[in-house]
Amino acid sequence: MEYPDSYELVFQEPAAADDVVVVRRTQRAGPGGCPVYEDDTGIVRAEISERGDIRMLASGGHQAPASPVAARARR
Image 1 (cartoon, rainbow, N blue to C red):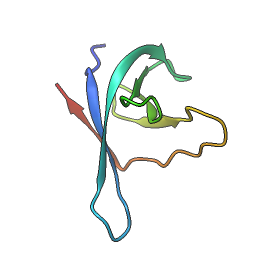
Image 2: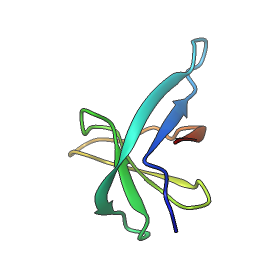
Image 3: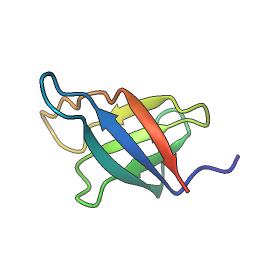
Image 4: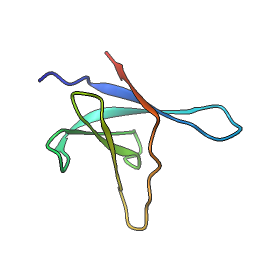
């Protein structure tokens, strides 16, 4: 399976414009065996399946990451 190099994760904020975070594929795999993507800071991490299913991954203790509403592949 060929995975995209990067995605845009779209987070909806009530009464505000959507937040978009660009994440890039890493060499790691997540708990489901799919690639782990992360932003430039390493704080936002997500496992994204070939179907576009998103599993947010905590990058540190006491973190409760929000779930994005969409993942758009970037080629």
